[in-house]
Length: 369
Image 1 (spheres, rainbow, N blue to C red):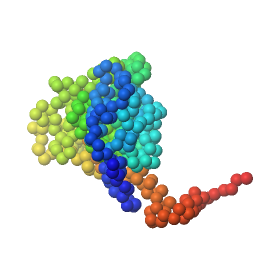
Image 2: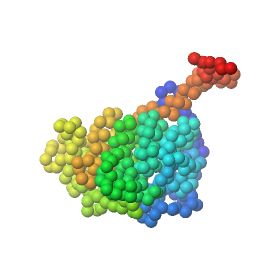
Image 3: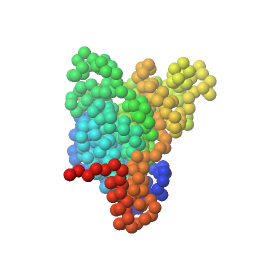
Image 4: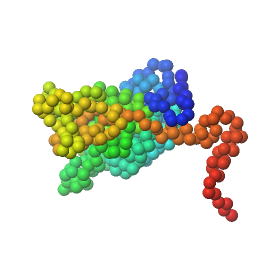
């Protein structure tokens, strides 16, 4: 077992998300990360595919199981910690990012993951999600989006389309749905991606990039609910339609899609966003080249707006944004080190205690009684 220590204090360097987590030299397989609990989801649920992909992927991290923790909220997806042989917590509705923030800040030696759903994360948990993204805490958030409340038997969710007929909206939903990727980009998320439960190769590659990112990684996973919202993503899964429905985002490559790349994305001067054009109708130099590393999120946001917005059944899939920024927990540990004298190399216990006492009692204080 080896451990990577903190780098020198100051502005934290940008390391991979697991660099400070104890590693293992022992060979691992997916079985090592599979618990003895019976998996209890509905037959055909997309959660099975995601669980299998995560169990198969975790050995690639090369980390000890006891240094990996999965935090979930409430919902079908939130059963996840039971099925992984790691540490975990089935926590409070919508509050998984908050609990994960505390864990990541207190324990740099842990790889912290959040598993949540569109209802858990974007309704009661919306505030907690955006602040985790804003703070850029070291955690990887897997947001399962099936556009429905599955655990409570089929009410509309924050991502259900307008007009959606459900048990709670018998005449059709009046709400305008959230676009999780747009929301994450608006909150200045440093790693924002979207993938599909049934595309094992793409899902695994996005998970690998998300886990390696130093900061908050948000991965929206389109996940089918066969009982209460079956077929919500048929357009991007059907062999007959997916070529025209999926807009693949590949770093450094022109954004084209459709059969034989017949369609492309270009800047829309009229709106300041992007638009879909026929590839044959534009110069190759005008086709938008994907740059997830651009520190300015405007273009990534514009691409995210193509999700079912003016373009029927289309969805950009891939990594929208992947940039570096100081993380909250690294900065918090830096402050603690400075306050306790560790930053100057002063190891005198009494002196550190005096510094801490002065910090706590400094400024405006009152004596009561």
